[in-house]
Amino acid sequence: MTHKRFDNKVAIITGAASGIGAATARLMASEGAKVVLADISGDAANALAAALGPDAMAVTCDVSKEAEVGALIKAAADTHGRIDILFNNAGIGSFANTVELPPDQWEQVIAVDLHSVYYACHHAIPHMPRGSAIVNTASISGLGGDYRFAAYNAAKGAVINYTKALAVDHARDGIRVNALCPGLVETPITAGLNQMPGLPEEWHKRIPLGRGAQPEEMANVVAFLASDAASYMTGSIIVADGGTTAHTGQPEVAQFAGMPEA
Ligand SMILES: NC(=O)c1ccc[n+]([C@@H]2O[C@H](COP(=O)([O-])OP(=O)(O)OC[C@H]3O[C@@H](n4cnc5c(N)ncnc54)[C@H](O)[C@@H]3O)[C@@H](O)[C@H]2O)c1
Image 1 (tube, rainbow, N blue to C red):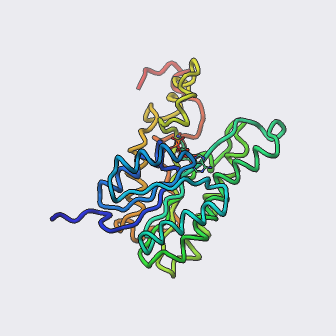
Image 2: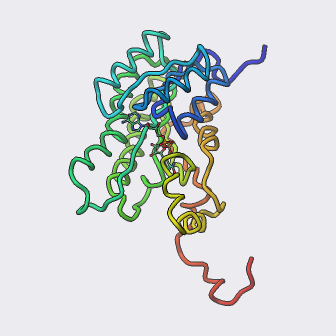
Image 3: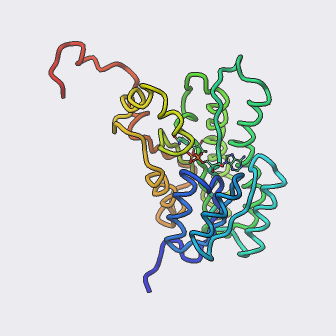
């Protein structure tokens, strides 16, 4: 029998019902993991778990609520005895600048995107043996500012530095902690943006690879970071953005200087 990358590994995935989380759940399950799918959308998480088979279970969980995250981790640890992989991935955004943004929306974004990572790590780490891995979904929006995306920029920036703090604190426990910074990914969160006339073209112009990513392209990076192949990586902030942040943002001067198209 061939050895699979995640044979007998127990993986908790938050925001597992859709997009990057669902693609990662499918990939890890296909490579032998016992997956625990956590999502506020319990029906969708249950449907995915049923489709993945008996080694998948779903837990309805609002990751912004400490008690619900505690119950999620307990359910996973009670069922499987340990947790090898924690993928903190659930997230939301809110389009507003600081003046426009009401305090309850600020608090909600920070709670779902940032507090959730602390809640999950706080409860899960005591169940994680040496050789375990945590992956946090940050964003290129955690590396710089976007127009009217203040709470999300703040939350994802904090996830990046918190990833480094976790990595330092738990390296000697044999637990690696890394973060993924996606650029544009074609998931339900961004599907609405694609309906806005002119926006997809404008967006794709700013991505050197000229397109958004498929969620499976993010799942491949997450799976690598969670696997033993990344055994010397901890505290790494991995950008997978089609080249977006490699560009300085300066205009293509040659175009205006009448040089022929490259
Ligand atoms: N799609 C992108 O372009 C993009 C880019 C950078 C970062 N991200 C990040 O990737 C992560 C996954 O996003 P996605 O694009 O797959 O989006 P998605 O909307 O497809 O999936 C997000 C999932 O999180 C769940 N969720 C939302 N709030 C929750 C809560 N309070 N508790 C539990 N589950 C909750 C949703 O029900 C959904 O199933 C998020 O952290 C997002 O910020 C996405």
